[in-house]
Image 1 (cartoon, rainbow, N blue to C red):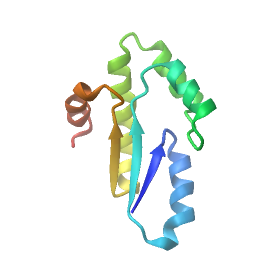
Image 2 (image 1 turned 180 degrees about the vertical axis):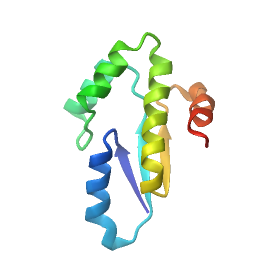
Image 3 (image 1 turned 45 degrees about the vertical axis):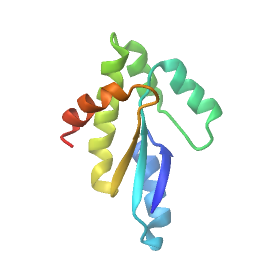
Length: 108
């Protein structure tokens, strides 16, 4: 199997899947909670291969409750990615206590 870095854009995942389809490998997509716009910008600038779309940066920046915003974004991404891959690797980066809420919201 392959495990990706954090993915925030379905088009990026689709492109990766197209390029690796011939390998017939199972894919685990990485999901990292976005804690802040600053974190998202840091990931864009410093983490090779990670691209957080501007819309998501704005969404987490405008969220009144960053934890709820992170759950909302991660849930939406997981729901979108699940049909395309065989699993997700959720990386809460210190927000482990939010995992039950995320799993409930995604129906996992």
